[in-house]
Image: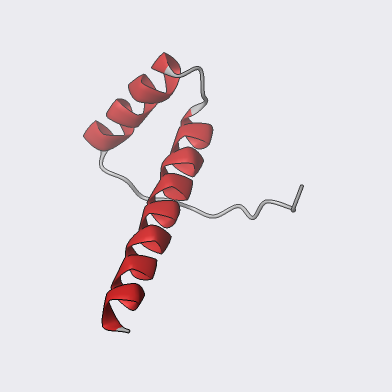
Length: 57
């Protein structure tokens, strides 16, 4: 597994509470839930980008 890089994230307290709750429901830590959501967003972006490129050709 690649080394993980730590950084500071400023987030609205209400958003953080929602992420904590959601993560607990899915048996993930808060950090794990944020990482999961970022990965899902990146995958969705890649799929959208491929569709856009395909429609231009």
